[in-house]
Image 1 (cartoon, rainbow, N blue to C red):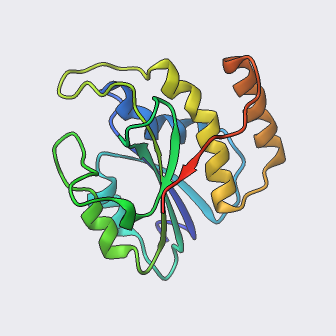
Image 2: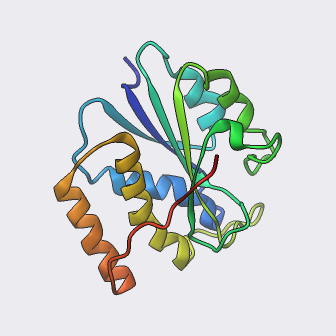
Length: 181
């Protein structure tokens, strides 16, 4: 079995500044203790075209995609979307591939949630490694949203995330995640 019941896929390219958000979230999630039915994967740019096509709807019931999403908010703000919330052509990678189309093919078989963060800067085609401060601060909040979305009560991990967020922000904040519907 390639993937489990719940798959969390971080999409993006760390070579283009904030576009590396998805892989950065996955890197942090690898430090957590998660149930055996959860698989986390750095899907890079190949997520929609390769990784998502490998999902078996008989096994995978929930797909969480973590990526940047330009929806006109303040940098670092988090939103939850469903594939039907994405207008045609609105969700593209750096190579102008439409990423919504592969999701449309599997959305009736697998529960899909896209957790997007508003980027501050994406530098494609110019290389720039490193996330902006606003996007870096969104990582612990995003992980909390993911854990809540998949119904994982991981008290130890959640305490560590709150501690990390206090160190980064100076105070613990609740996620001001907006849900699109």
